[in-house]
Amino acid sequence: MRAANRRRLCAFSGSALIVVGAIACGQKGPPLPPLVLLPAPPVVTADRRGSSVDVGFTVPNANDDGSRPANLARIDIFAINGTGAGMTDLEVIKRGTRVASVPVKSPRNPNDTVEAGASTDVLEPPEGKGLDQGTGSTVTEEITTLILRPGESDARGPRAAAREVPLLGPSEAALVRTYLGVGVDKRGRLGRFSKRVTVPLVLAPPKPSQPTITYNETKITVRWQPPAIGETAEPSMLSSRPLDSSSGALAYHVYDSETGVRLTQAPVTDPAYEDSRIEWGATRCYAVRAVKTVGASTLESEAGEPQCETLVDTFAPAAPKGLNAVSSGGVINLIWEANTEPDIAGYYVYRGQAGAHLERLTPMPVPEASFLDSGVPPGVRFVYAVVAVDKAGNVSAQSNRVEETAR
Image (cartoon, rainbow, N blue to C red):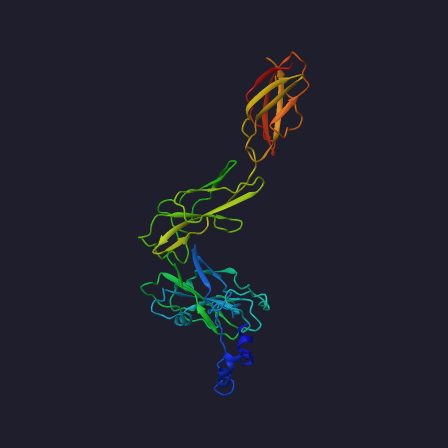
């Protein structure tokens, strides 16, 4: 541990340390300044969705020199209108607004650390209430009229700063909002600042229609209607801010509306999405957001009306293929190609005399792709067919028919 190594430096002996000991431990000098460990910067992201901004961050689990655990007690997220170009990070947080202050578990003694790559098992784990180090979280900021009116304070409840300061006035980059984060230790000292991220403050695109859902045995298809030409987003405090005319065409993100998880890795341009998460009996729910590109940023609409569907297996398996019959003494042996569907429960065997209706011979599904019919009298010609049945009880069409006479 770093603090222990520092305290024990003069206690070691050896030929290589005699001279050093004489100088460093035999003479008095000015006291060494206390070791101040600063947490590494958090990783911050920002996504504008409708009239709100989701600011994600990852709590650092190390200090800026690589030692662990991080010396921090909370993560502060700040925001300012404009890009903050020409301003230092300290100037940004002084002139901007503290959006959130999220507590983090802290080490009891910040000087008890291990070097980068070493195990932390020898240390007491960070304690207290709050997020674990190394985990991620999200805070949401609503785009209110206070944010859009330069010169007014932005007090928004218990997470706002104790003393709010006015936002920056209009500038060449006034139609964006910039976010950054920083770790703060128990004494209120700031760590390293995150990279700045920006979102546009222009009007969001209108939301798409409620999706429709169809599915088969292998995939779910989600479709929706794009917003009508000339349609605008719902009236809001952003309605007076026109969308940048240089923006490209609309694209779309698809979300699981139950969990909020985004299903599309990148925006899709076609109003359709295919989901391979087939699980019979499960309910799948979807909502779609329109995505507009504004400069180097993307802007999402409010979520469209969600749609849910419970997946029910109504799909019959394929008819078995390659049925063959081989006669031997008093029995007829049937064999066919096994079906490849993963939910096959087995097969029903049908039998009848030539020209007559076939009756089901097996009361329960036969698990294997073969059957030995030993109940046939010799010299009588019989016709056979096989059907497949799945675990949901869906039955396939009949296989090819074969005729055979027992000997």
